[in-house]
Image 1 (cartoon, rainbow, N blue to C red):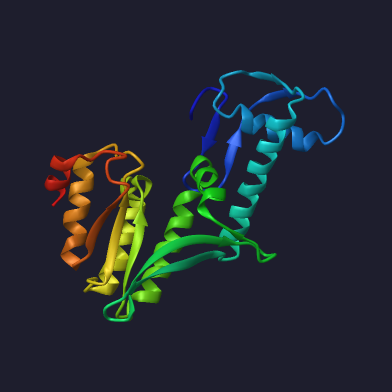
Image 2 (cartoon, helix red, strand yellow):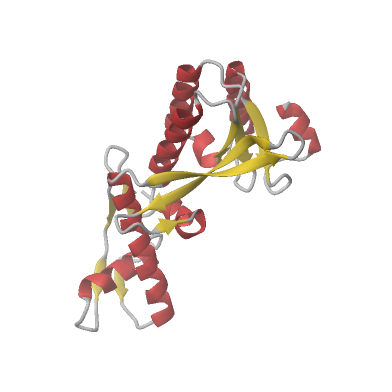
Length: 229
């Protein structure tokens, strides 16, 4: 519960409840305007809100609301699609490694990149479901392949006990995960650096390799990289 009249999120259900008293001056598109106000004031402690005309804000919030609906549709329709960026070895003249990249595909066949949906997914508590689908699919596709594959892991993933259990479960099914690379996104903060160390120590038991993306952008310096081994 973020505030007295803020967003309430339930772990047991994929619903977000917002309590507000709202007054809409204009008479058309009431539901759309209510949604805009709820999105705009989701972290406010105000008990009473009045809708005012703000075309730029309205367009942004309506687009945000649209993306929430797209994500929910994608989750219902199994529309999380792994894309793979190949790394080609010029000396060996073959592909030796892939970087896995998350994409979303809606019913109409539209493809969405992380820049379009990731912030919204995190803000509305939908990120974990997307990440779980992505991780399990990449493991299933590469468990029997010879090429290596890297999987991006954010602070959201590693900080979450549920996501850690998903990852440990996939590694347990894999046994020897020498072809898997966990690429830790350093652009996000880890609330418990010791937890990150313990996570790395545990996944290394399965021969997973560790990489750091955007080095220097988040929690690490050279000494901390040394501590992470």
